[in-house]
Amino acid sequence: MRIAVTDAFRPLLTECLLAALQGAAADIQQSGLDPENFAEPLERFDSIRATLDALGWGALPSIDVTTHRDVLQAALLKRLATERECMVGGSALRTRRAGTYAGEIGQFLEEVR
Amino acid sequence: MTAPIVIPPLLIACLTDGSYGELQSAAEAVVSVAQSPQRTPAALTEPCKRVAAQHALLGTLEAGGVPMALLPALTAACATAEDNEQDAYSEGARAGKGEEWATAQERLLIVLEQFGVTLASIDYDGKMADADR
Image 1: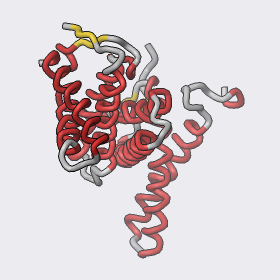
Image 2: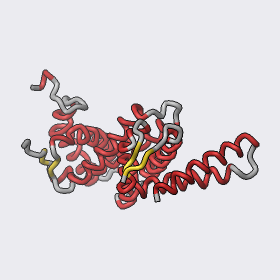
Image 3: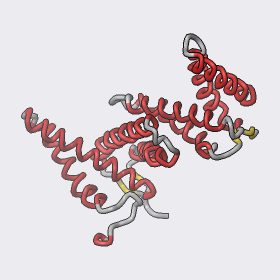
Image 4: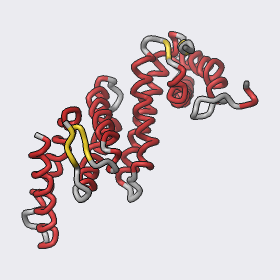
């Protein structure tokens, strides 16, 4: 099932996925010398990269959620948690912006489910 | 269909180590680009492809045969393996560990002679340099 990704939301979604990709790459980098440590972050990295490919790295207006649901949910939930933290105790501008981002992410997550 | 590149059994372990080293280097490049203002898809494509290629290479090395399509990844892993063996060779010689020194030397020579010389003349797109055709 494909769902639309609005022009307004696409940059934020791409940012969430890039942050997830960066996290997986950092985990690969820190996997040490034991080959077993590489398997999970490598699989995660490949899945996120595939999702970014499917989104045209932010250039395409829709995505297949049947295939990419897990990656989308993980990346969005992580960013949502960050934005919720920023909604408490930050500057008025940061709090307002975090509220906007959290709302947009929450709305998209509803569609992804 | 082109035959796979056959890897001598003695080299599988050191090329696997080289591939993990190259994988970590590629991952470091992804992190570096992702943290920079230039975190564009175009800038991330190259290190991401390097990660994917090493991932694919690791899956084939153990079997002892690497498809020609993975030649650039094998070249990169080979270069890291060569560095590793140089280090082991120097360390073994310094520490007076005859056996480790001899093994490292043997691997290094094979890397250099069988792979280093051949693969070093092949560019990242997997094309032979004109002089070596």
